[in-house]
Amino acid sequence: MTDETLHKKFEEAVAFVNSYTEPLPADLLLKLYAYFKIANRNFDNPGSRTPLINAFKANALFQAKNMGRKEAMENYIELVNSELKKF
Picture 1 (cartoon, rainbow, N blue to C red):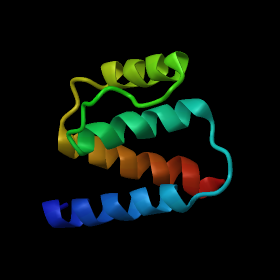
Picture 2: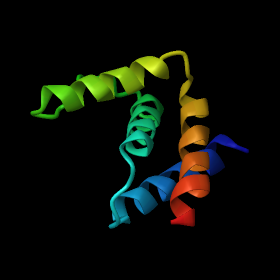
Picture 3: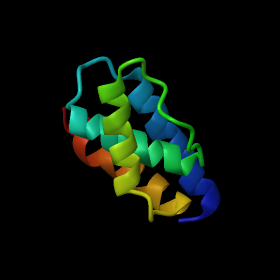
C-alpha cells in the first residue's frame, strides 16, 4: 500500500470512528486512542480531567510504544474494519 493510500484509508477510518454514535467497549477505544496518537506523532499527556482515564490512556500508549507510525495507521484501519464495521 502506498503512503498516500494508507493516509487516505486512515483518514476514512478516523472519520468513520468520529461519526460512530453507538457506545464502544473501553478496550477498543483505548487501542484506537493509542494507534491514533502514534499515527499522528502526538505524545502529549492525555487530557482527561479524570486521573483514572488518564492512567488507562497512558497505559495504552505504553503498550504500543514500539510501534511505528505506519504500523499504527495500519492497525487502526484493521481494528475499525474488523471490530467497528461488524456492530
